[in-house]
Image 1 (cartoon, rainbow, N blue to C red):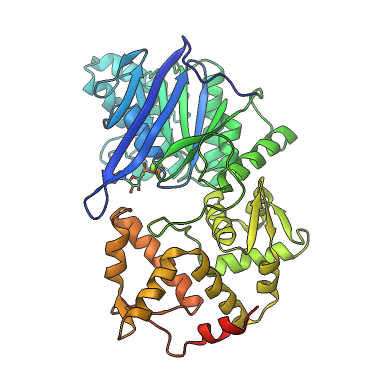
Image 2: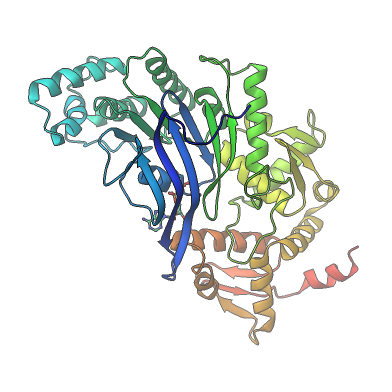
Length: 449
Ligand code: ADP
Ligand code: MG
């Protein structure tokens, strides 16, 4: 079912073994992309899915020639890409319009930079504005437009350059669901009807359904460092029916892939959660959401097992949020994620049935066993004569493998989880982490089965 991945004559962009590193918070090089092979061929829409921070935007910026790669090759029509490619346009999540320019002026901007004469600029802008459904708003300023209309201006600005390749970086995710869907369908219409000269599109998305509705191929990106882990062909004619069995099955399959362990490269990932290392990222899931999801899982209609896409609808969590919560539950052994379904474990059942004290004890026990950072903090506190340590100590450690902002996010999660599990306490004003006054956890841990 999968298409051949080797180079074909119709390849427009080819990335070969592309690698990229950024500086970590501590100044050492941190690999963000590793050995990425990706070919975009004429006539196809490819969707790229992956967790935030996995390097998708970086990859797009490399493809657009906005930044260089450290290793590997980027070929545009068979030739190395130097600098920005004029036939490649990018649409960003944030609207990035100039607030003091009208819609017409915003759309004309890129053409001006390319030395296209004023008359042609005007003609083409008017046409692009009409095509994207904004006729009558040529003279409006961005602040007079809704979010959806502003994003249409951003798209018109990209389309007016008649790019061969359109790279869309979460172009719909800042919009409300309906607006995003409408805009997506309009772009698909333009594409299907041949009204735009664009030969290929790469769409980065957070939304699994969106990827399945749009793309001919869906690529799943693994993180740390980013690489393509799984590829799935969507051989369905467009427009696609979102409720159809074929679409639902693909959404399910992708959910399964995204939630599966990220450790194995190449073939299908395993269903077991990856074993974490000390400097790894943690899923951003707060305890309340984890508890809530576990409780819902035990209720009708799920009774212990739920289809993740179904659960996303029922809980009104976004795909990304749900993936974080389910990955946290699976890391901690409260649930298992198998092929797009989530199953509560025996331990998860005990958790839900337990009172607050039992819940906290179980939680503390599991994070100590499965989250190396939590165990490391706890161990450090036990070794320290005063029993308290400043958070900066741990931030410094995390900065070896993570960026500044990520180190902070990861420590915040570890602190929140540790506080709830009574593994340690945290003083928000001073930033000091300390052992709990009464070490209940240890005493209970000894008698627990
Ligand atoms: P995604 O788009 O998948 O969310 P990004 O490509 O934006 O991921 O980022 C991947 C990683 O690279 C992140 O850890 C991010 O912090 C880091 N990163 C991105 N741009 C830079 C930069 N200019 N300098 C340092 N780190 C960066
Ligand atoms: Mg991004």
